[in-house]
Image (cartoon, rainbow, N blue to C red; front, side, top):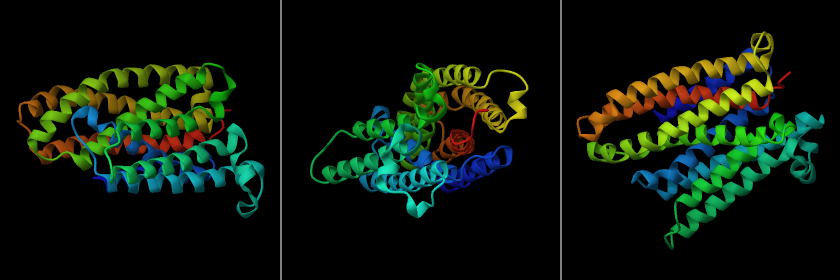
Length: 290
């Protein structure tokens, strides 16, 4: 299921390339966003009564760091007009508009790997992984278009964190929770926390879209608008699916009435839609709003 989700992230990026002309760094950005979202979910699993294995966290952190490094370097090269091999460390680290998300991603991945090393000798709080990954999400979301206003970065940050938690936690549950008892314990807790997250995701998404591009022909006449529209349609579908799952799946799972396979399939269905959304979001992050 996680492999299928990875494929659909690629589908989302391809769709973004068709609808608009995002920078080539959007490919690395999609991997970056997927990995850091999964780290947010893995780190937050203790809130649901579940724990993730250290090797899985370490592997995800490695992917995050590598994607951040490649994506950051590509983005700097594209925006400065220099060859990838001519971009120095100073240029990579300079400026919110170019190197900051990549730099934060690399340092954040190293911090998570440090946590993994400490976890082999002690018992550091797993929530620290979620906090570090959340900083990586914020570094991506508050740069670019969002820096043009004093308060829009806050809106974008909340939007990105809610999306990362939703996608990352679903992915972490699919890969971690086993047995009827495991789903009966974790799923109701996830559902309880998901409702305010989805509400915040929806409200902040609408506000950010109206402020950044407005309502009108620009939604289909511009590449940014088309990608935004596609992402919004998928989010509406996803919210509908989540509402149906909340009524038809969660109560039964809480009563141990759902098999492990059915729970994984149901959670995987949400994850696959979220994967396409993440791919589109990666393209949106490197597409001009006008």
